Image 1 (cartoon, helix red, strand yellow):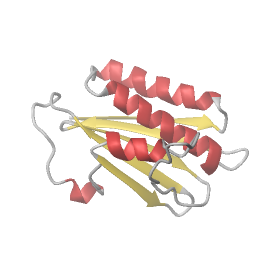
Image 2: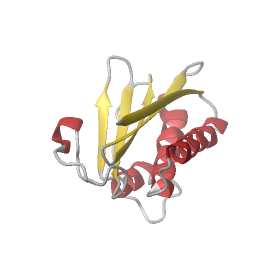
Image 3: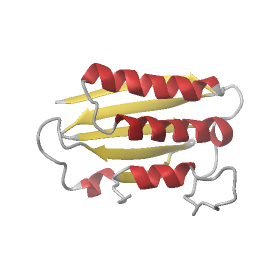
Length: 145
């Protein structure tokens, strides 16, 4: 069984909190508590990047959430140009750690170039759910985190 949900958000700082709430509420409805804090933190970082760097004025970004076969995935898609890059955090910097955090917390992480914009994907393996762990992520674009 696989569940999925998607929601669009405007380019606004308040959308970061709304995206985090959407993901937390959805995971709660699905009965997923394992790794919920990690998943919510990662969607906050990805939504922040979309708002600050990815979404052109007047456009929205979307957050998609899927759960099935012991795997939760989040995707944040925006229509802006550019390709986000994971940087080694500078200890003295005030920013620049978002994608690094996502890459460290998620079991899989990928940036996909789209026809317009890009999608940032992160996957989280769960020990519970269907009782089995996911194998063979290569087809899903797994890049170990």
